[in-house]
Image (cartoon, rainbow, N blue to C red; front, side):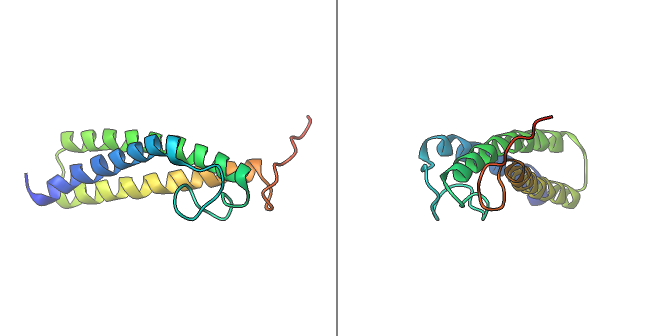
Length: 126
């Protein structure tokens, strides 16, 4: 197995493992208040403790899903006969896509729940 073939498998497996490990660690290590050291840190998530806790809970749920997705992707990558350069791009693209999904879905959910000042939006009666 040459280097690019190993990268094709190693990147998604390693990043998937890190996502799942971070999910497990964050369940016990995330402080209740925003900080600059650990957790999901964006402008929206750091407005107050309510935004902080929800953003971290949502991002960690997506991180677990994307960790599993990357493992599945690595397994599929080992079963498909492709050029090693394309395989490495496939692996890197999967990681990039995972990060975009984690951030995008978390931020979209945050904008549905909170207004721009960090207050919860009122539910509309239908």
